[in-house]
Amino acid sequence: MPMSRNRDAYAELQRLLREVDTLRSIQATLGWDQETMMPPAGAPARAEQLALVAALGHERSTDERVGALLAECEADATLLADERVAANLREIRRDYDRARRLPTALVREFAETASLSMNAWKEARQRSDFAAFAPWLAKVVELNRRKAECYTDGGSGSALYDALLDEYEPGARAADVESIFTELRGALVPMIAEVAGAAAQPDDAPFRAAVPIPAQQELGRFVLERLGFDLMAGRLDTSTHPFCEGAAAGDTRLTTRYAETRFPDALSSTLHEAGHGMYEQGLPKREFPGQPLAQSASLSIHESQSRLWENMVGRSPEFWQWLMPVAHRVLGASTHRFSPDDLYRAVNRVERTLIRVDADETTYNLHIMLRFDLERALISGDLAIADLPAAWNDRVRSDLGLEVPDDARGCLQDIHWPMAAFGYFATYTLGTLYAAQLWDAIRRDLADLPDQIARGEFGALLGWLRENVHRHGRRYPAGELCRRATGAPLDAAPLIGYLRGKLAAVYGV
Ligand code: ZN
Image (spheres, protein in one colour):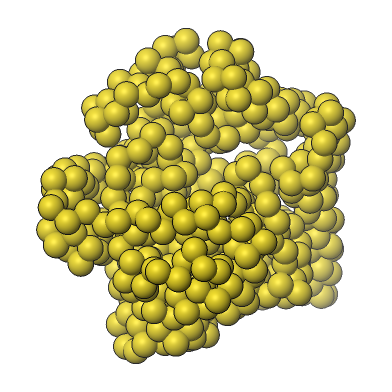
């Protein structure tokens, strides 16, 4: 009875993957705690915990038994006849083959080094001391190169970087990313110059109004609930770097950060992470526990969800028409003089700045392109570690026309390289491109969406995203998901058109 035997094989395979996923969720919870609650002196012990759990997860996921069960399932035509099962098996195979290429010792060293390096970076950034962090950067670059060599059978050149990119963005190639980035860059540079010279610059007064942090927290929670983020299955906390951790089914952790004088920033971060969080909550985690079909399609698709809520929704005039009366009540007297239009214009200011996470939605992409180029040069060895600060500062001068006063506001500003994540940055701008293309499709399908947003109604929008993006998990690769949801492959035109429209409205250019 081969059919029933293979049904059993599939059930057993699912059981094993669920255990691997439980280990991943333990890792995720420990990581969340490290960034939100853990006292600094706990760092070495946390690094050991994370390294052990990572090693256990790797051992389990690369067990010969997984491979044997997988092979049995792949040989069964009745299993493959179910398209979702076939997609699940395809993705399990991808994960298994990639994981099998990495020795457990390397996985353990990677996790431990990343945790220690992040802590070294936090101190180095505080003192703006690149020299103190340089040995760690050398180590994480070296580890990434070794990992890429495992994936490519000792490959070299652009194949190494592609192998790293592939981890975050399955199937993506640096050359393709570069080509769409080049098109986008060609449109952005003159747009930014034009805006800088525009006569009417939006007033940033809303960013200077003092608002007590508890009031900002109350507004953030109110917005989360209205958008459709389930607070019974998630939390919002505070961390230096806002993030979202889809720890488990029923447990999605968001963080944001607050400053008394910058309430729109805290709200943007909350909207951004809520977009990630609603994607996590919309994945079919109970139906396919621990399996690829319950995981995000790619990091850029994940980022498309955060950018869509943060930018397309949260920087629209209708959003502020709805929220401003609530904000007046919750945030208090210091905000009473601001109209919805004041906020709409203020949050859409375009300004060349040094810090990526504070950048507006137009210049943000230049920050990403800079990192994408420099990290490729670090991995290929074309750029020596010691030369990074100078290369960074040169690029900021030529792209943004700014002088970098210290490395804390230069090459030490981001957590990604310290956490050993190379190949990650590009997914931010790819995600923004996907967001704009999805937004065009949504606007075609939901004609009265602006009116709904002006009434604070987000159910139809979330429903569209659940139907066209969330529920599929990894069933389709990112590019295919985009084609199915929007009718076309990824293209720079929707984002360029969106930004042009925005800048015309705000700056009259
Ligand atoms: Zn994000």
